[in-house]
Image (tube, rainbow over all chains, first blue to last red; front, side):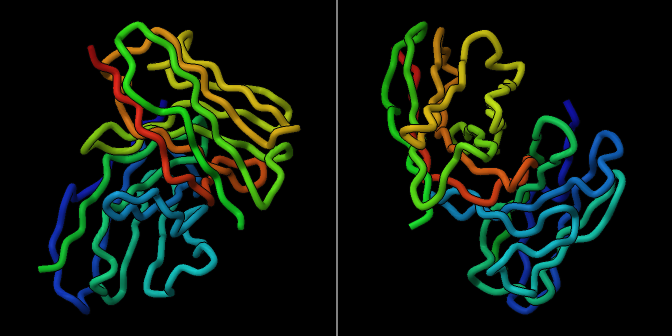
Length: 106
Length: 118
């Protein structure tokens, strides 16, 4: 199994801030990396797939980058509705998820 | 409406069995990969199992030998048979649809809660 490690585990930022979440894979996964957003009591929602591709309907303030073992999810201007937990997931082999990053408004 | 709906959760004693169902509507699951992902209360996401369009199945080590995934294309439904349940299997179980022949999950159900407790 490929271990996925996210950092930080939690963060608080102000509305309008640029927010960055990092995900590191235990081995080279090329760009087989996806990002999900989960709001309390809801199912996860796909935001970014294959490293940097924005899922249809997702606001353009979300972006993804990286390859190999190091990946980043960026929110260019944080909005109140972005309060959620964010998970990375590798799709190189049998799926595995990072432990999640909880994002709050400061 | 395109959606997945999970049913079958509930309270079960340790060692017991339960079968979850994931019914698809608005699309045909026969040509797609469908997966089960679980989330223990207050914890992160854990992949459980997947069934490919050709019926090939795979499982996480934590459930291998105890859980079994299957599908009925005529009912547009995927099942998860869970045997020898343990307290650590307590979680909300989500079914999810993968994009074509990948494990990129673009559609999720609302989940069904399984509680294993005496």
